[in-house]
Amino acid sequence: MRQCKTMSKATRKKIIAGNWKMNMTPSQARDLINMLKPACDTAESDVVFCVPYVDIPVALDMLKGSKISVGAQNVHCRDNGAYTGEISAPMLKELGVKYVIIGHSERRQFFAEADALVNMKIKKAMEHGLIPIVCVGETLEQRKQGITIDFVRTQTKIALMGIAPDDAKQIVIAYEPIWAIGTGENAKPEQAEEVCRAIRQVIGEMYDTNVAANMRIQYGGSVTAATAAELFNQPNIDGGLVGGASLKADFAEIVNYS
Ligand code: PGA
Figure (cartoon, rainbow, N blue to C red):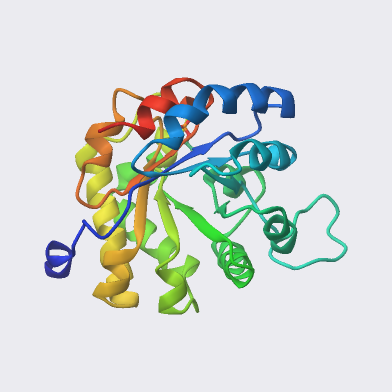
């Protein structure tokens, strides 16, 4: 805990990413980007639109020359091969994608992605120069049992297993309590801060204070324009991963929360 207090927060630029999930056809994506681009392009934080695969070309084209980056929502753990329906890191990289969400709870829940696979995907993404946004977070049941910190620590440790310090520094972790995703009930700022601080602490134990101080940790789960500032102003919260509200004009307010 001592090391967390001495870590400089000033060195970390906030990063706010919209996770569009399975929403927006390419033409709808065009309309949404037209609406959000002006306010997002002038934000102080790094801004990322994590769009469905088919919207990536539209997003990249429309955001060319802007400060807004494009992210994917998933990636396969191999370069190529007989994996029908999957998309690889080299494919995303060649298009110009910068970030990729890995291990979102919806992928863990509906597509049986386990921690070991998440680790493989992170390594593959980094091998090709993509920046992973790695999601961790507990269920309501785990929170009630009082095992949130233990669970999230373990998820974080397995996700980062075998990843070199210089690579780890680039990774973004998104703490997303599952009970807060899409429910309209965000974690209280103190709850989110407590877990984000614990994640930073485990990074410090795995690597060192330098890596821990540099790694950006987001909060995600029902973030709205009304709650963004109190969450993102916590000392260990470096921005957010935003689902529902990233599909609306609210996202422009969220990225300009301060
Ligand atoms: P939400 O989704 O903001 O709609 O709760 C967040 C996420 O799943 O990344």
